[in-house]
Length: 67
Image 1 (cartoon, rainbow, N blue to C red):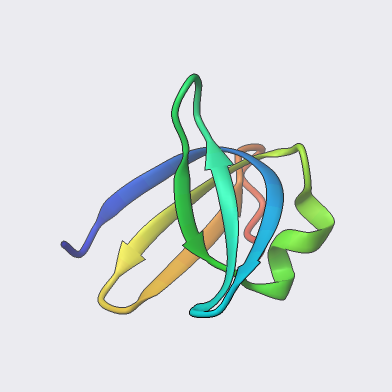
Image 2: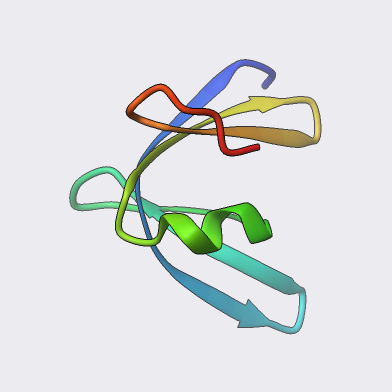
């Protein structure tokens, strides 16, 4: 599934027994993605992730990379 886009707003972090995750909400649904510290400073901001293998490269929607 390389090259899959994950657009939306980072809303909150979730911790459960399997690890830490972030919710990325594009509209009425959401994606649960593995947590990365780089997301912390972008809470409630528009972000977009591209899945490449087992990693996600994050970018703020203003075109600035946050990875």
